[in-house]
Image (cartoon, rainbow, N blue to C red):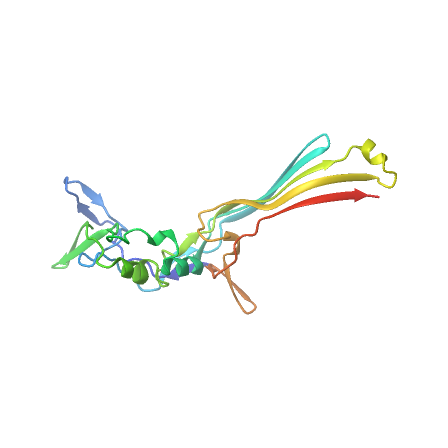
Length: 238
């Protein structure tokens, strides 16, 4: 799977414009078309190309510094250019368990977009100012419905500190006082320290779905959160 296909909002075609209250011509190419009566947009057929799955590039690198007996090392991973459909985001948003469905609950909201009126085969546009007639139906049937592939598809770009390790090698004179030891060190470490990403749910590296023995990229289906671990290590050489 190299591309994600699905439904998007019905949008104004390229080259569409409208005139605002000050007489300025506003380019509204690609703007969401909103029904002027209900205040809700509509979705396209589910065969629109939404986004590319595979990242443009992936990388990993490490670095370490040492001062006398103390050393610090870090390992990083990153990727850019990929996208994924999030079932987790759809499910939690649809159930109203995320903050992305708070707007408009008290008194409705105005969806950013344009109204379209066709007369004698000519379509004209104006800025949408209609308040949604039913904000619950807007979220449950349009914005956060499973079929809205556009809203539930996100970039999987990330920059992650995979591991950080601080180690101290005990001085030789300390070790030599214990005759059976040839060397000793103590270290503290942590994994998955931080992750910078636009991905809204859990771990962008786990953005795939499993069906039997098959793994499908581009679909995240209820993965577990990224696990952060911390530990302490003692190394003895005899």
